Image (cartoon, rainbow, N blue to C red; front, side):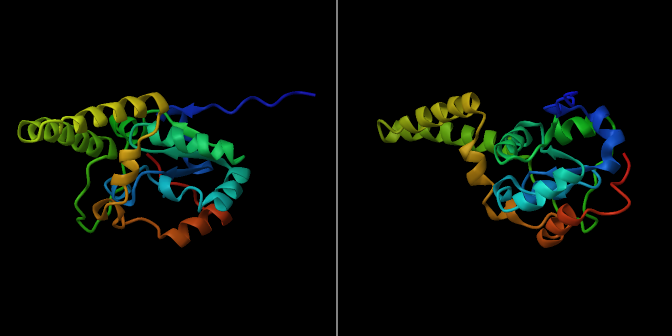
Amino acid sequence: MTTPPAQPAALTVEELRPRLGHADVIDVRTPAEYGSGHIPGALNVPLDRLDEALPALRTASSRALLVAVCASGGRSGAACARLAAAGVPAVSLDGGTDAWASGGHRLDRPSDGSRAVWPMERQVRLTAGSLVVLGVLLDLAIPGARVLSLLIGAGLVFSALSNTCGMAVLLSKLPHNRRAGGGTGWDATLRILTDGRTGGAAGA
């Protein structure tokens, strides 16, 4: 009995391009990040709603290759690990939408002039850096306040070692990250994942 080839853990941009019309691409960033520019045909399934979408994602993965995408590959890798634990096979796009855009391929954006938000990784860097500076400055007036900087530093180390980011989870719930990104509505997204769609994704 021949063993089928193992599914790759990740695809490169050039490996994904010819599969776009035959794969279900899910963008696991926040709705606002998704609206700032996403791979043509990608559906927005935010990381914090992954469990809610599991039945639809399981059905989609039985029909076609399921590809998770984020800004640079970190969150999509985490999404694939969570999906694998639930018995749903999926692959991550290596380098995410950053690599896609860097390769000269277009991103879909809303036509309503919505202002783009920063990628989550950049928001985390700004927030963490600001808290570290705040801890140092507060220590000048309140001795011991620099422990805030120590805690933020320890949190960043833990984040790197565990490949998780609690700060990103918290930031994703802020209003500017939750606003609609100009894509398909949530119910319609689940229907598409469950029932499929004709015509495939747009080209690159």
